[in-house]
Length: 326
Image (cartoon, rainbow, N blue to C red):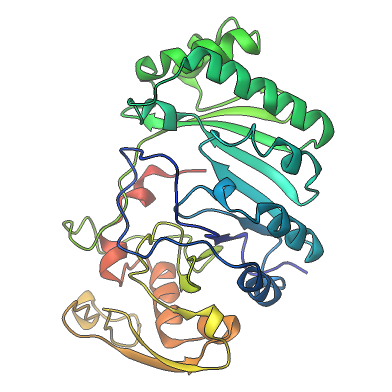
């Protein structure tokens, strides 16, 4: 039976060992999700998806219990996709080699370009990284996506010359620089790819409205859970501005202040849809994952997306949708 969500993001930590320029500073407490809380979440979401992404903000391989988390995912028959900056892959090679739950690892190679203060030989770093990835995938044959999501224009590869040279030489792709001019997804070997994309800005309530019309995959085929258990519609709500409820407070009642107010969604004119940052709506419900999904707030936002309407102020300030990512 097809499950509701194509993917669910779980932020097992919002702590990172790098400071990339494109990553906004979050206004949340930095922490690591406990093993008990990870299991509470997996128990509740297992019937809603087959794929969990261990990422919203933070570096997942920093988590001191990453091995146990991967084992829990396997226990609940969940496929894991890890998004990492790559700096800790060598240190965690033993764990990654035997974790049966891993489906794919996305390695953000652009993180090195984004941290110009890193004091090491980048050529040797990339060679060592690629060697480690090859050793791991000989044992555990998961997919690997080498990401370069730092372009102003999809054909602009100049800023990635160093890493592209390393990829070209290591994987013996003589025409790589020609390929990246016309392709954003390049197969370099079995189950290994290069993925290029333009840089994006994180949505922020302090930014100007981009649009009040449009759709989104949030609450349709994806949803995210922040490190403290706050459930949000998608992986770009980095500060939990669209707080749908807390999955770790299951069984308790709470009043969620969402910063959002709307009329019941219907086919009437835009003027009948009232969005007001100054007036909060309170939604009182049991905080199980199922009840969070069935809350008025979640249902109204999802119905808005289906009707090409962006109801929440944060959604109106999100430009990620325009990029039409994979």
